[in-house]
Length: 248
Image 1 (cartoon, rainbow, N blue to C red):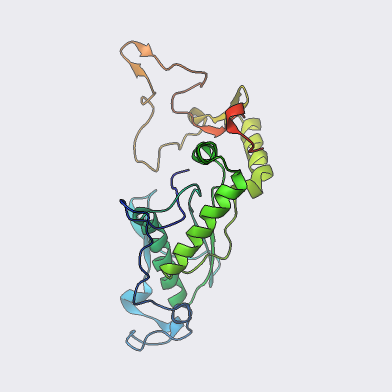
Image 2 (cartoon, one colour):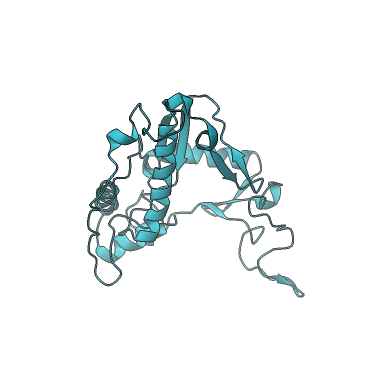
């Protein structure tokens, strides 16, 4: 969980940003005809620099040509908000970036199937439930609705669907159990951690060698305190505590 969201605010006063006086309509974004100024014309006949969409590949550190697996369909997943608070402009930078990419793919003629998740259960949400004395559903519904309002105010094209974490708990449990069965995860009490040492490619996206980067290691040896096998291991499932309130 990395983002709070819901409502765009100014730092000093929680006020809505004014709706922009200009906006690209959804009809324009999905139009079958490109702007008259586009070279060569024709949605499927765009040539030259405009037709060569290149995306940065974190694995290769290069800009690779975009080649869809099943053209003209493009499946597109983006990370959504954690719905426990208002969003700020920094949060929406990511959503605007997704929107620009999606509009460009549509302009090039692709059928874009966009899915954006909603994180509606995590520690920040639980802490806010306790602070405001509200239920999980009431809290997350409130900020989910405000998030969608802000998407509309910025004229961001909606995703096809916004799956919630709480709607897929059984799938999450099954996936974690599969990782345990294959020795990629292990239990510590009621919690489950990912075994980073088992996954040889761990750290490859960061471009760093993490072999000696154990938490707490130094001249005195491994000083990591805790039940994890490795200081780098991260939690996949946290065991329930009474302070977690009614989230089960």
